[in-house]
Each structure stands twice: as structure tokens, then as C-alpha cells.
Figure (cartoon, rainbow, N blue to C red):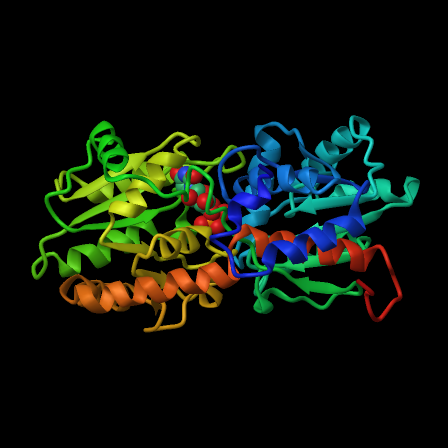
Length: 407
Ligand code: UDP
């Protein structure tokens, strides 16, 4: 059975037929995806599922990861925080570390595929090589670019403008650019270990292994330990409602290879949680897909209290599992949640606490919200929709100057 056929009963009718049609137009094309980490974070998650589907449709699709030392990843983490609007001090030496690392990578990469698809700021400067190639270059930015720190953005922008198109996850991330900008939201794979259905016995065995008790309603945030995910704010909100509702909080997450700050944030979170037996802090290895699946499924309410966010795949994952989600109104999260219909959008610790208390005390309301969220995800945020959008984009960029793509 084709991998794609396995999605037929999960996705909206006709989605697959449209994909096969687009696939025929792209048969034989070679596509190279490049990013900065093979595991951890949303980009790696999506690529690991998308590349095999492109191959099945007849394209030669590959995925490469750039290499860099610790100094490079500290610089790109600074870039990341700065692009999210943080007041990072990025020095000329930092910029030099960045360009030297990319130059070193360029000596080892051919980059002659029909379409070079570069993900996020870390590998953006690979586009220098396009002067020697005649192929199409796409830059796909997964992060929140709505208020970038100009020191870093002014450095990156001349690279971005050498691409044929740039792709963003939410309308608010659009920038003034001389190249076309395309909006394509990310997606989840409903058949991956992270999202597939699980039996009650499977869920229980994972919870036993992880030592997660289920005697009380469970409130969860699954996220890398990153300040922009506001784990301390989650604890604060939980503590506000504790006198009124008996529940347990679980902060589960790991760190990504390209995120050197993770360990420090984790230790701050552990310290803040103290010895409260109702607050569990769990550091999971990057391969914990089934574990995260089980944790999300057993949660009564899922929180994603991001202060800044690219898209927030964890929100989609929880909605797909029919969970009521309370999330920060940042980045792509408002695309996923219509406030009080398919989840709750908040802007503060107080708002998060208020809605947490509300949802824990009104299970029927919470359940309805989760059901609405699942349908919204089915129509907008499953991998087949993203596959279709990417293929449409490939066709569009391969026909420059044409106002209309003939299918
Ligand atoms: N994730 C994971 N392990 C963790 C924390 C997160 O596998 O310890 C996954 C999570 O389930 C989701 C992705 O990593 O699929 C995070 O994507 P999101 O867009 O929420 O945030 P990012 O980490 O990319 O900022």
C-alpha cells in the first residue's frame, strides 16, 4: 500500500487525488531540504515525514543538515532570539563565526538539485552558492519574524533576497522583501508515532514507564525548555489555581541540538517547581514521540503558554487528540485556535490561570472545544495539506513570471 493511501480516511475528501495530480507534474524533479538539526523541534519533525512522501510521488527528495560547532549554535541561538524581538547583543565576531561556518559547509555541499529548500536562518547564507547554479531557491522561515531585532535582520535580509521566494507560517511574519512571499502553515502527521491513535493499554504502559500518576486531572505543557515557551509562567498560573482545583502539572520537554540554552532553562524550571509533588518536570530524550503522544492523550487540559512562537506544532498535536488547549496568542497559534470555539487564547499568567480553572471545572465545555479543534486540524493542519501547498509552490517557482499556473 502506498504511504499516501493510509491517510485517505483521515483527511478531507479529494485531498489525495489533488496530491497525485500535482505529483505527476513534478515527477523526476530533485529537491534538497536543508536545516540545522536532525532531531528536536518542529522543523525536523515535519521533514522526517514529508521527505518520504515526496519520494513516493516520484521526486528525488533529500534532506541534509548543516554542520557547526558550539560557537556556531550559540550565535544562531542569538539570531533566533533576536529575530523573535529579543535585545541580543550580536557582535561582529558572532557574524564572522556565522559566515565562516556557512563557508565551511559550502565546500562540502553540491547544491545542484532543481529546488533547494532552505529552512530557517541558520543555513540561509548557503544561497551564496546560487551564483554557480541555475536552480530554484526557496527560503522557508518557521519562526516569528513580526518584530525582528534589526541588527540581525539587516544582516540576513540580503541573503533572503537572493532566493526566488520566501515562505512564512503566519501572515504577521511578512516582511518588506524584494522577492515573493508565500504563506504556508506547517502541519502534523496523523500517522506518526507522535500522533497516531493509541490503545488505553499502550498509553498506560508509557505512563507507568515514565512514572506519571493519573489519580488527578493532568495539566500539561510539552515544549523545549526555552524562555519563549514561558515554562515559569505556566507554573505561576498553575499555582494560582491550586487552592481551588486539585490537579497535577506536567512540564515535559527536551532540548534541541541547536539550542544551547535548554539545560539552563530546565534547571531554572526545576528550581521554581521546588518540591511540590503536584508539579512534575520531565526531560525527555528527542526520540520520545510515543511518550509525548501518550502524555498529550492522557492530559485533561494542554497549555502552550508561548510568548513568541513560530507556529506551535504542539498546539496542533493536542487539538488533533481532541484536547482543550489554552495557548498564548503568539505567532501561528491564533491560526489554530479560534478563541472560545476551538481552544483558548491568552495573553498573561492571570488569563491562563482563569481559563485553566474554568476548563478543569467544566469538562463538557472543554470536551466540545477539543472536538472543534480536532476538526479544524483535520481541514487545515494535516501533512497532506502541507504537501499539496509545497507542490503548488514548486510549480509556481518553476514558472517564473507566469501569473497563473496551469494544472
Ligand atoms: N517536541 C519533542 N520533544 C520535546 C519537546 C517538543 O519531540 O521534548 C516536539 C513537539 O511534540 C513538537 C515539536 O517538537 O512536535 C515542537 O514544535 P513547536 O512548533 O511546538 O515548537 P519549536 O520547538 O519548533 O519551537
